[in-house]
Amino acid sequence: MTAPTVPDTRPETAARTAIEVRGVSRWFGNVVAVNDITMSIGSGVTGLLGPNGAGKTTLLHLMAGLLAPSRGEIRIGDAPVWRNPEIYRALGLVVDREDTYGFLSARELVEATATLHRLPQPRAAADRAIAMVGLGSAADRRVDTYSKGMRQRARVAAALVHDPAVLLLDEPFNGMDPRQRLELMELLHQMGEAGRSVLFSSHILEEVEQVSQSIQVMVAGRLAASGDHRAIRRLMTQRPHEFRLASSDDRRLGVALLALPSVSGVELEPPGLLIRASDYGAFTLALPAAARDAGVRLYQVLPADESLESVFSYLIAG
Ligand SMILES: Nc1ncnc2c1ncn2[C@@H]1O[C@H](COP(=O)(O)OP(=O)(O)OP(=O)(O)O)[C@@H](O)[C@H]1O
Image (cartoon, rainbow, N blue to C red):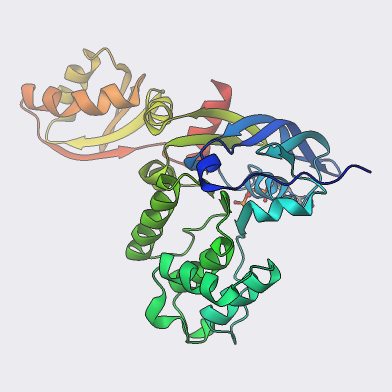
């Protein structure tokens, strides 16, 4: 039997520590949850974007060594993840479940985690992690008296206590209010800036593009796209799209819009207009000027097929 490889987690090598996913599939009976994924995650913040059921949780659990790949391999740094408990020195995971012991304070929770990691000074490590997530003043209160955002912070502190080079978070923004969301985004950003590889899953593009340097899009178990937020936004907006418009003169507006290169169809559908645009981004940019030039006042512009599923199915079809 070969000895488990210990990944190098010194801060100066963290920037090089990447998660390498090579040809990984995972199936559960007949369900293929992750289908032949190859990706490489470097330092900084990466968003794993996909609709419900895309396979994000399964992929994160594979990366965290909690699940065996049915095929392929995942490595962190130079070390395989599966059957390699040493990997947990380099890895922190925040799962998508409210499974914190409510009777503990955040400090007790984080210190217990530090002890499990056999850190030499668990108390000091817990204090550091709690300060990082900004829970200082509430750290000695029971976790079940916290808001959802505070509980999430406590769980992030526990995942961070051993200063891992890689942090994985499953839907960390779920159920948070806008302020808590911003605070957590700032924290992820700081951790990425410090050279860690931070990967978090989400089904909301706006959330992912605000904080991620790079985005991996998963649909139906497959990697559908990857790139920086501009490239992904472009992919999602330069696509055919339908809009419903209401205006002071729909007929006149319809004629004016037909002249736009980004418009491929116009139908008068009282009480408004149905527009088929060949390019979402170009159309939304051109619309206000076209209406103004035609002397028409716009009352309403509604995307007619804005569901995330339609965006994602376009991506896999494309
Ligand atoms: N233990 C399991 N047994 C059987 N099927 C599973 C299991 N875990 C996941 N699946 C299936 O694999 C697919 C991917 O699920 P997964 O939870 O990874 O997706 P997800 O993108 O995280 O979605 P969500 O955001 O809804 O959790 C789904 O069809 C799911 O039903």
